[in-house]
Image (tube, rainbow, N blue to C red; front, side, top):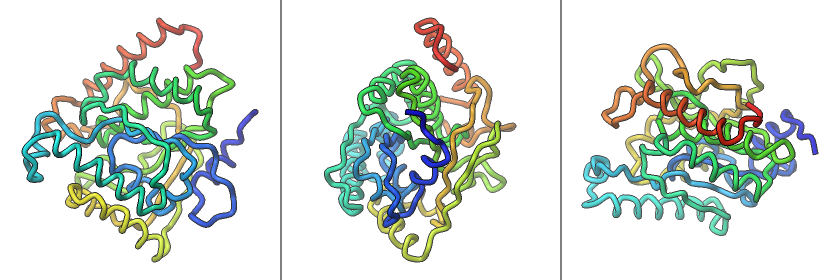
Length: 280
């Protein structure tokens, strides 16, 4: 069946209570709080989706763990899992189909080819009409890794299994260090839906975000004024997402945007060698 990307975009970004059926969806996000940030005001529409959490939310250097009062990254990981479970329950998604790939936080970029293959398997198994995920914008290396893997996995899945990729606005470098709830300009023209949130939707989204107590300082930077969605543009992951430093170039995580591009080039070469005739 040939999918209409505009119809998929409209239904995937519709508000809670909209009579239009949600497309069969696969949600691929890097961290436990990402779904609440990306589509917290309309998350309940994803009750029949399959959700893949790519990382476990706990960097192994334990800087974040200790800063938040935990004695180990394992305790921090478990706390973030409990927060996610509480948020999904609050949204009426306690029985949602979900899994975690358990990749350490900040390390998804080091297993791009493996991540791509795992996602391609899930796409073949679940046959989603849409994959909701991160844009490639240099906000967080795990977000960029998800974008790379989703694009390549959809190509690997084959023509008959290819869903529409819909991106959810997140954050990236801006004039004031971080810019939230906006997309960077797309490298190719794409359709975008801007969903201004009503007071009720803003309240609903904040309640869901407040489940992530360990991320309170980070989440305070998001005003909850709108949610934005767009059909994913074509990216060249071997080039930086924008001129100048990416946001995560400012953090001592051991991974710069330049290194990400080199890792992406290596993974792209490996994937092409495995399937030289796949669509790009």
